Image (cartoon, rainbow, N blue to C red):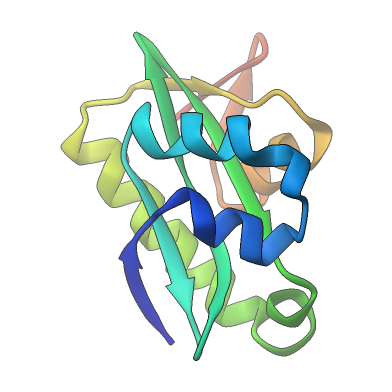
Length: 116
């Protein structure tokens, strides 16, 4: 498994949702992001930065079933690196899935904003 720069096509491959093109394009242009590859894209994530970062993340069924621990470990490392590089001190998530994932990665939620 390796980490590469994210492209909107990666998200569409993972989710299979062709209706998500606009969101995937926004994810590509609005902040740092990455894709995990295991022969093909299996997970991707990053930040949308608007002063405070909006965290987002998608994962394939294969990533959940075959690589969950490795994906979580790689995502935690990459998100922490991007957080340091971009000097992000607060972030939020729009969905319960992203919210739970950030908490699982060790980010602390205070007043609907995640801090580190």
